[in-house]
Length: 327
Image (tube, rainbow, N blue to C red):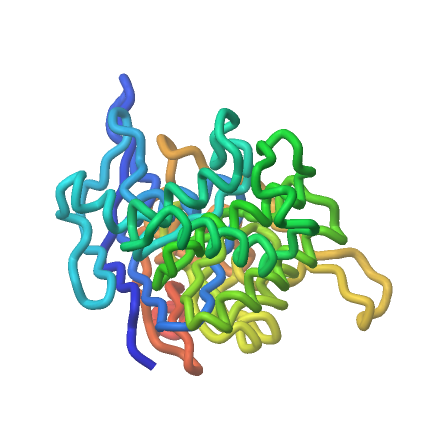
């Protein structure tokens, strides 16, 4: 399968009165065409900043993409002008935000917003765009779409608004959809419907998906591969079944151990001690070492490289030969 999105050595930082601090620190990722990558980690690990960096939506100032390459279909998009990037957003990359009210204009009907988006990216007449908008609303499960195409965002429930946002993200037939916590504000039953909808629509259209979430249950049921982030860095990446069943990085082990299961005996869930470090206080060496139950001297001294292990890539000194040398 061809690589659609490639991120190399991405550095995104924020400037404050106390200095410049990294929110994404040397990230390397790829997503294959038609596949779903789950990007997971605790709040503050850099997931959403990564998504916004790809879309060039980092507020500047105080934020900036300081270094790295972002390629879409082999073409670098990190150096495009604002007008060129505006053509990429929506047309080649669609985005689903966690709060649909921030994605929809309250002054325009949902039909008008779909029509405007399609006409700005595709060569369609107003009539053709409206017919496609209506078909999209039907496809995403909006009941009585013919009547509701003229309704305004506030006239929809939260779940229905999120369906409209999905239609908006897909209306220009993008190659990649970035879904940033798309079910956070929704009831559990509605969450399942929305995730199934995203998965079905993208599979039918051959669209790749980057699913940003802190919910490992969501990833287990939706993604093909999982990338675990910690303090702006990649901790581990690999096939979803391998990473969930047998994680390698101690942080990934902690995340998987915190997932409740009906199959396991009743016992306490794993708890990762401590909290995610502030951007201004990221530890030296491996950023996870103060919270890691398997840390040894080298972990505090040197940042671990990414190494291949059992079909995955992991950044941990336990797998680069350092642990054996320390014994």
